[in-house]
Length: 71
Image (cartoon, rainbow, N blue to C red; front, top):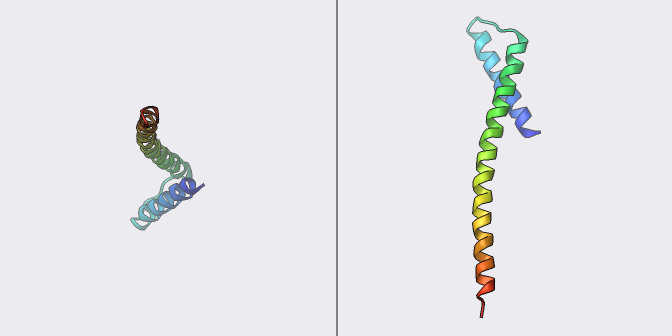
């Protein structure tokens, strides 16, 4: 899935930054970072989908109203 690959890319880039600064972290921390990034992407996506759903719901009600009163 796209978000998993994107999260891995971000975590790998962070690893590069950490290591170029002369530091290191255990692999488990980078795995956790990937999960946190995925969770952030999921949260943003769900928020956007809820807004789209609300707009579609409003549009549906508007179409139904127009159909009921169509002459």
